[in-house]
Image (tube, rainbow, N blue to C red; front, side, top):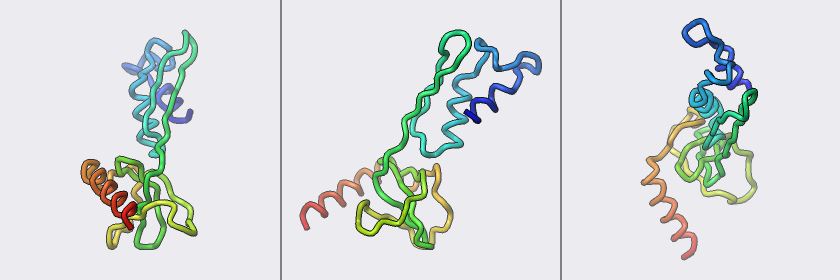
Length: 131
């Protein structure tokens, strides 16, 4: 809601408030939400009548972990985008990947090219199944 309000409080052409339902930049609000909340995979903003906006989101689902040099780990989705700090797990709930010396939080970043990550995930699944 904060991201939508930030956009709505601006003015178009320095005159018209963007909170007018006809002037609301739906794509700008969606982009703002996606950029500020890495956990969101998809965002759709639509007009709901003449007085409201409807915001629908799809959250990313954990596929594996990306672990840092300090042992903290982040969830990554099926496209290798890091999106949230993960708790410490006592067992191997998720496959863990890491890059030697990585120290910067991977939030909202593509960590491995998606095509390479797909192949890597398939290889790990194959090896796990044939242990």
